[in-house]
Image (cartoon, rainbow, N blue to C red):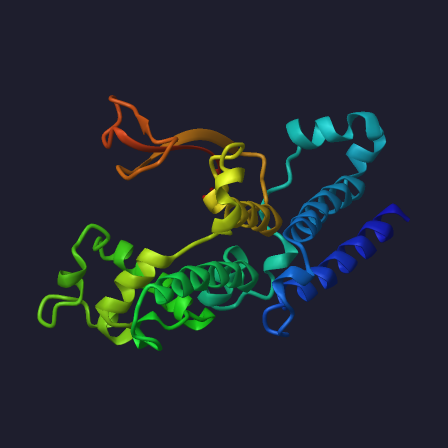
Length: 270
């Protein structure tokens, strides 16, 4: 009976998630469904799935609810792996959307266009094509260039060399011109700049808080950890302006942002 109840709960949550994730495609305004509601659904899905796994394990059921959570955390022998949310992902673009979904990207488009509108107001020439609004398709192309530049180790290469006709990669030139790329780097925003000054006093991650919470929620809903986990820290190289940038002299890069991460040894999921 309990298993049936949790299965019904999972189905209901999945239907609601599909509805929320298709907001942009259906033309629904972002404000119609709050980010808090969206994250709550993701969290509820994760909790219901854990409860369903506990109910399906006869050894855990026999121990009773008092020890079930302890046994799940310390003595579970089931292997981890992708959850049912990932079953429909067949292409690389589908897998990418599991972590950076269209709802999240639409928020970035909205905030970046607000910055572009502010820049346009400072120009006497109205209708400047170079300052046109960004759309979802162009944002994905921009992210694709960033990913490709990391694969080719071009992330520290000047853009003039990346777009060079003889030495540069033609993929960059085919996607967008150098001027447009550097403009998008300049105007990319992830939050409401009008409320940032007040929020940043309590939360230093305010400029990326919404996107960060979405990524964390998606990571939790896409994967169920296995029994072989390890935690470690990583210093992401960074020398720009950041209030929580750290200096660790015994690290190869020395300057950067320290992340504390959990790794699954079986699936290399981080």
